[in-house]
Length: 307
Image (cartoon, rainbow, N blue to C red; front, side, top):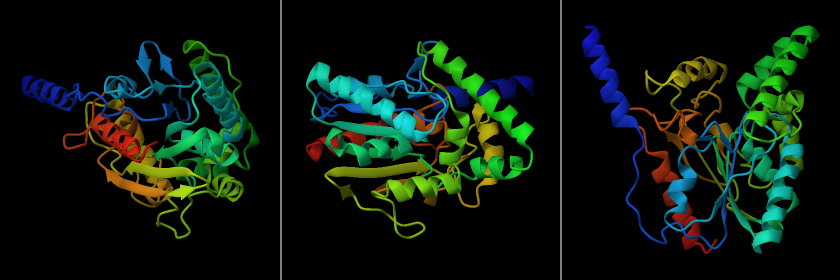
């Protein structure tokens, strides 16, 4: 029995690892560079592994210029958004770029929207991946259930800040951490406040689509709706539990309707929140779509639009 289980695990692992896609010169060669924006507790590269695992390499080899900023692992999206603006302005000054195609995961979607709203001159397109535009149930639950327990809340914030600091140091950076600000923007109430200040491309109906183009910026979104996909991926178990805090189909953290921004490309990929950035290490569900193929096709879409 043990040997059969071991064999099955090996088959699952090999069949779901992300292997290189066929190369096609120029397929992802967009006019403007692609910038991969990380989410909460994110980084550019740490311990030899990218946050967007393998995505940069697969886009680059077919012509794309790809950059990966390293903003605060834990902070509000006004702060992280300003950090992203500084990063883009620096790239612009060094290389002479005019605009950028932002591909942003989770809270990174708020950061990218902040930039597109306040500095549309820098942004050609903004694509939100598994980003809770209307807030995340888990963040709201934590805020609601620690409201009358300030010591517990303070302890949670302190722990998150320490973890964020660890991520910063291990990825070679030293940005400030503020878990209270991060928790607020990701909650239902905080997201609503953010949307009133930065309303671009937010759907008017609960689960509709927003405007595809606002102030010259193209807005897109996509997400998954399958928290548990692969029994050999440890992150699936955590996300399966986290998914219970959402009242709709979700990726383990973000509800399908909450993920809608601009033109919704798809909100039902067989991915969880980790799969959306090809983690952990490219392992995904048995029938899940290859994230590398999806992003490669989307960047080709941007190329065809002259972006």
